[in-house]
Length: 214
Image (cartoon, rainbow, N blue to C red; front, side, top):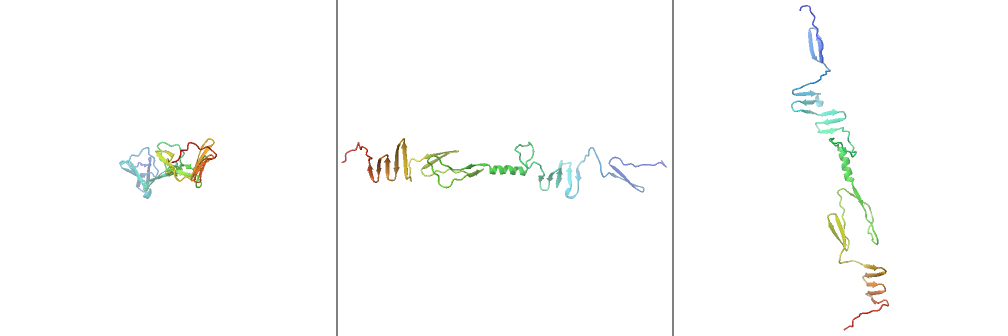
């Protein structure tokens, strides 16, 4: 009624200002709510930092979202700043792998393999220089059959055999106990007995079972 005084007070999240007889009621610069419901969209930020919370589609759009050290770049469709940049060998179920971890695995696969070398045993010989060769993932190792050898491959099994007809040999020695027979381009020698292109040498042995000529 006339003469009474009316007081306008700031309520929660409300700011009232007065200029003469004019009162301005607005929301406070800093507000606090237990819950906010928006029928359509909520806009946060301005310009390139604008983030839109779309209540109709349930989506969030914007250029960059940052949570701690993690950045989600909507323009480039990238996620950076993840902490799992190394591979410990123990997986965490449901966590996305980083490119750093994938490169670590790719490098390990590329460098995985074994080493191959050559050698001899018994009376074997080796041509050329022996070396140790790294066989990496995806590399092919070839087993060759040399002179007078036959190669038979059955899947991952390789079998070397001596060919039934030998060519290109210069000499062969066959030993049975203390007896040795040598065959070479000149002929055959067994102990002191020889049949060569120089003739027959009985080595002071008896020659028997010789058929008559004619």
